[in-house]
Image (cartoon, rainbow, N blue to C red):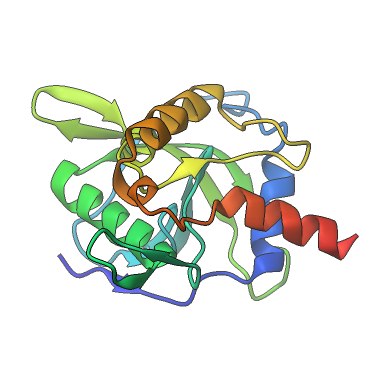
Length: 193
């Protein structure tokens, strides 16, 4: 598997996605969207919730990964990049579970040079089970429930999964200095007003 990492999108792009996700339909009218496989090569991880494949940018609907450049202290005492940890977990899950994703909406880039982002819901294959990839990321403590600018969860079951992971102190929640990415994004929104 040949995953590559790239520089994450700028904060204004993240904020635009956060605002545009509010009220997005779960599925467009007309023909149901067809699931597609995430390839086992040629995938570029952007963040722990966004990747590129075949020239298209995909983002897990309702999921917010750690923001690259934010730090946390792991149980061994090392300071690490939280966003990198989220991206590594997403890459490992894609490799191990070979998810199939269904597009549910598209967000156009905020600048001509930015690609559109396709919001997807993905099913991961774990043994004989098919599980939601976003739920796995969140319950394992490597991603968070995304929120709208109005402060409401994009997908309510993810906030329940996040609370369980936080209470169990799994994944990144084991770090006492973990910075919640939603708090960072909301602070940036408030500072820009």
